[in-house]
Structure formats: structure tokens, C-alpha cells
Image 1 (cartoon, rainbow, N blue to C red):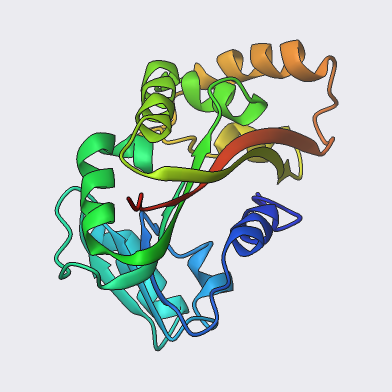
Image 2 (image 1 turned 180 degrees about the vertical axis):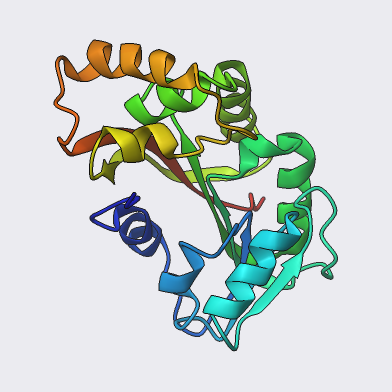
Length: 221
């Protein structure tokens, strides 16, 4: 599977902020999929994620970068440590109010906070929701961002494309499942039929993933 085949996520981040020479924190970096395309540009790039296996993989594939096990809800950094803080599709996986409060704390007074969050109804989200329905969580997180103690400079919705070479690759993708069950194939087949119509077994499948992106700054009186 190839996520975001046109690298639109990185394009949107760089549309809102200039990373060159900055001190950047990515919260929820996972295995470093997005980090890999950003880490060489800032003066300092730090990525955190609570999953040890993901952090180990990021360290092995992206050298000379500061990857750490950590949670956005309790950042280990001093106040005003970063000029840019990124939540890359991760805010809804934690206590969003607490994580935003922590992000504000470690952000410089003139810094930028970038939040990317999946929409609740995109094609990709519907597949995730077969196994863990995040609809309420995504909508609640969106409200928290829109009503937090930050000024929203920009807000856009864009889309990326997840590309699967055939149905088997789609059915075998984890979609955050802890274990793939035999009956999953039937559920996913029904959703493919609903979204794409009749699809041949060896046909490539592309899922649209719609994403909200916010650029926020601290409010100044």
C-alpha cells in the first residue's frame, strides 16, 4: 500500500509554515512516514510517539533525528522549546484538550501549531470505522481545535489518495486492527461494493482520505 501518493500532507504543512531553520516537534510521528520528508529541513526536528516499536523503526530509517517515546498529553520539554509543533493525524488518539494545552506550553510566543486530522466520513475513514468507529472522537477533536485558546490563521480541507495494488492488499492492510479476522474480508467487500461498485480481484484500488488542516498561533492582546 502506498499512502498519500502525491505527498499532499507535506505540501500542506509547507504551505502554512517555513520549516527552514526552525525547531520543530512532531507529535504522533509513528514510524516516521511524514517525518522522513520533513526532518532534514529544520534546525532541530524532534518526533515523539507512545509506541516503542514505531519509534525504533523511525530511528533505524531516519538517522541523525531525535525520535523519542512520549505522549502529547505530558511533554517532557521546557516552555517555549519549539517554534513549530505538528500534530500529524494524531490528536484524536489522545486527550485532545490536554495535548493542545501541552503543545501551547512548549510553543514559542510567535510559533505556529499545525493540526492535521482525518474527516469523519472519507472513504479511508469508513474502512477504519469497520473495526474501530472513530466518528464521535474525530468530531469531538475538531470542536476542541476550533474552540481552543489559539487563533486560527488558516483552515482548509484537502484530500490524499491511499493506493492498493489489488483487493488482497486492501483486505490485508491492518486499518488499526489488532488481528485480521477471516470475516473481515466480507465486511470490506461490502464496503468496496458500496464505494466503488464491482471491482475485479486484480484491480488497483484507490481510497480518498479527506483531511482537515489548521494553522494556529497564540493569541496576543
